[in-house]
Amino acid sequence: MNAIELNGISLASLVLRIAIGTNLLGHGLVRIGNKYGVFREWMNTLFSNTPIPSTLISTMGYIIPPMELLLGVLILIGWQTKLSLLLASLLMCSLIFGMCLLEKWEIVGIQMIYMVCYFLALYSVENQILSIDSFLKMRNL
Image 1 (cartoon, rainbow, N blue to C red):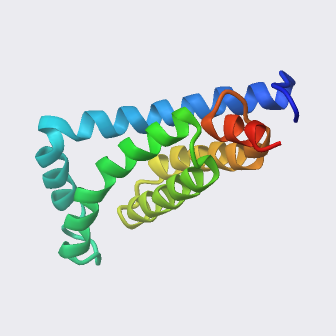
Image 2 (image 1 turned 90 degrees about the horizontal axis):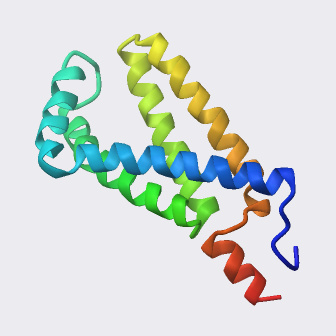
């Protein structure tokens, strides 16, 4: 693409990227601030009766909110989008695993819909527009 091409795939990629980025950013913002400790305690309580070691639960409680925040920003602005979407997908896989251990199948179903969205975003990442990645790509032509 030599110039911004507003075809269906590029527009769909943009809208999906904005939705995914906003979702992650919102999750991260809500959980960071003064609710950071509440989120970590909730994680520890929620997974206390699972085979996951408490150290890993605590670590994930610290990692998840800043990862959501960072990945949300990166995906929204479209910088290192492919890597950011891949990392967000792997984060979602870890959340799916946790919900499977808790037998929260309705949540797993919702998370699988997120995975379809990540798949579509990754599948169309080369067609993205209005992103730092696409701007840098155009400059290098």
